[in-house]
Amino acid sequence: MMGNDSYSSNRGSSRDVLSFLQNFLGGFYAKYGIEVKLVGGLSLSKFYYAFDAERNQFLARHFLPVLSYIKKDFNARAALGIVNVDIYEPGFNFIFGLAHPGLKVAVVSLYRLYPEFYGNPPDRKLLKERALKEVMHELGHVFGLGHCPNPKCVMHFSNSIIDTDIKSWMYCESCLRKLEKNLARSHV
Image 1 (cartoon, rainbow, N blue to C red):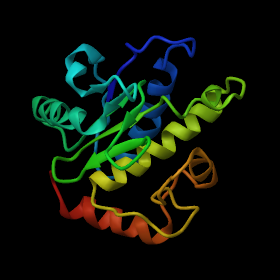
Image 2: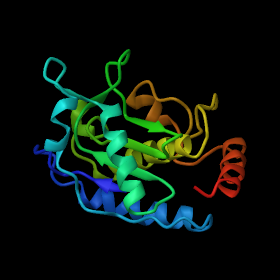
Image 3: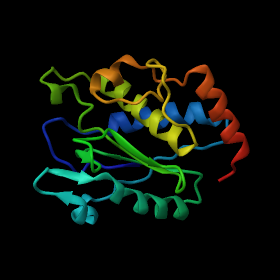
């Protein structure tokens, strides 16, 4: 798991969120023999070419090849990058995250997960819950899951923050079975 805190804002550091995610994911994935490590931050200056000045957003797909190299460097089953910038993909105004199951990498943006983004007061607990849901969602894709029609399942597509707030951090029974099967089958 890669964290990026180089985006300066009045939102403060995301270190507590990264620590929370590392601890939670470490516990969740330990039963599948997957160790979760937090490695140092990655400077956004390496992604200057991904920045679209007109949109004031980064094209998410440009983070994935770098994460793939990091995955190889650490001999990891998967790599997850967490950024504090707004990301998008063509055809979408924004995205919360993006995964590439073939590369076994994903990126999640905290930018639109902050309650302050929507004009609400800061709430670190809510931020952590939202981050957990998006991370579990993207890692689900990394490990072969598609979107789920169950609005409570973490694999349900989030078209807005409301969708993220409605769904659980956990996989529904069907998605969890698929995830367990995929993790047992693939030793990436």
